[in-house]
Length: 390
Image (cartoon, rainbow, N blue to C red):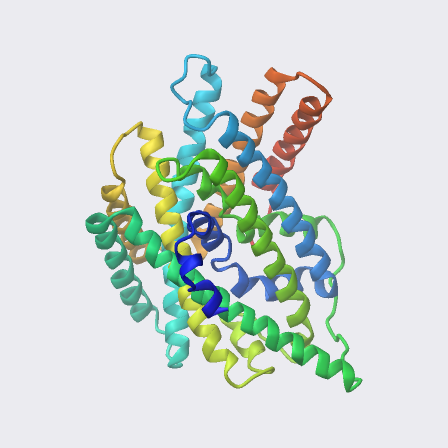
């Protein structure tokens, strides 16, 4: 996988570069925490549940892709209704709050995994490491700009994907060996499936979010390229999430304690070397996800303020604000704010898409699309109000 991802063809591919940013954001903390979370919520039905969530996220992605092709960059257009403009500005505000918290959360979690490697998780040292990394990213963004951040992100994603491929291979072999020995069975208890389960699943949306970063790469890539690569990123990440949960769930027969780094204990059951590789993957995963959201925040700010300049200063400002955030609050607690804010952002985007599609209403397809977008708006608003941020 490393040879493939770091081949000259891949490194020079514009399409892959445009795919990397949404992919990095989608597979941020998600693949590290999704398995224990889904097993806690749905037990042995976790693979079915995550499949539903991935499909739901893909439909949300279709909302963003519709808005890229029909609306993105037209906020100042005289043809755009005023209420749509106000909704778009509200979505900018909610997304910027989400990005700020997410950037701080990703790097803080990265610090926890680094400290886990030396068996010394101290909150003060975690904050210190987080500060150094965030400060470095801000300075690099300020001095070197988008391309340099994107290169760091691309290398991080490539390494992470190669390690994920190795882990999936290791887990697959472990499952096959168990099955051939007649020892494959699940001891997981399945909680009752009720309204609380539905509310918790709606709260899982934040785990598969990140594809919206494609929308704010306006200055770097064409709408067609952003639409195509967002779709590719969602498909790749969806396959990883479903495969990872399906293959790892049998190992939770012997796991009784869940925390942010439980997946390391789980993966150690299948291989001696995979836990060390997972820590490396976790570090690169959080690093690339933070960069992806920083890049998205830069593009978002420029579009919101109608600036025609490089977003270098924005990168530094967001890094400094994230540093303040991690010292003044518990990021693991306030990430619930980001969860609701992301859901609200998607709801606003779905309503905008519905209104734009309704104005077109040329045929049965556009009418059906309008109905779909309205349904997405209702579900997402339900998530904002009733979803339980897991």
